[in-house]
Amino acid sequence: MSPLAELRYFFTALGYFTRVPVPRWVGYEPHYLNAAARYFPLVGVLVGALGALVYLAALRVFPPGVAVLLSMAATLLVTGAFHEDGLADSCDAFGGGYTREDVLRIMHDSRIGAFGAIALMVALALKWQTLVALPPLLPLRVARTMIAAHAASRAFAIAYLRTLDYVRAEGKSKPVAQRLSWPALLCAAVLGVPWLFWAVWPQWPLAITTLVVLCVLHVALGVYFRRRLGGYTGDCLGFAQQIFELSIYLTGLAWISF
Image (tube, rainbow, N blue to C red):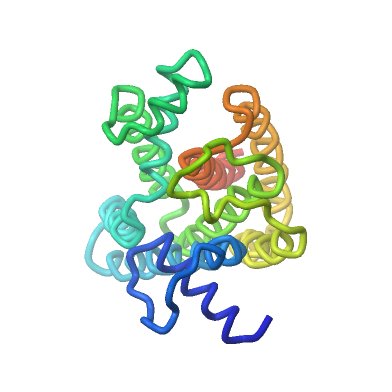
């Protein structure tokens, strides 16, 4: 692939997964999205970096609790709550649907129900409180953790494009949901996973522990998606990304507590 084509795929990923304007010359073709999937973790790096910068800037004026909330608001704004929407839709569907058809029908409904609202509130509250509870005297460490969590969680979520089948005949995620090649998956892993080691350096055992937790969760969620749906939808990817991101924060906090 030429550097120009790769740059086009990166901008395609940036435009699809965030609300950041991209250059007009990028254009759009359905096959761009599948090729752009490997840059999903790199988009996470940029989203996490924005959140980290807002957090560090806000700390100069506000206490950590407010700084974290402003950071979260910035990431929600730049992504359009893209993944949080998937979390809410998935929880509504899995919580309220009994058959596969029921789950897919509820997941497709744009309205939010009790399961989705509760899951969204709990997830955001957990993210807020966990980040606030990380050592306030090490703000750069917290900022690096934000970047690593956004990057690695997206790398693990996008891996389902390799291991599971997309279950809808049509859908917003259909163009991106073609089977991911092994080289593309390796590229996504390289762009997303090493940030975990950078975030906790020199405490690399924590990074390894976090990787183990992510791998276990990835397998468990994959088994659940396969059992309930026979594969995944775009909402499942958003749900998984949120679970993986939260698990990174919670693993880091548990490590410090013990």
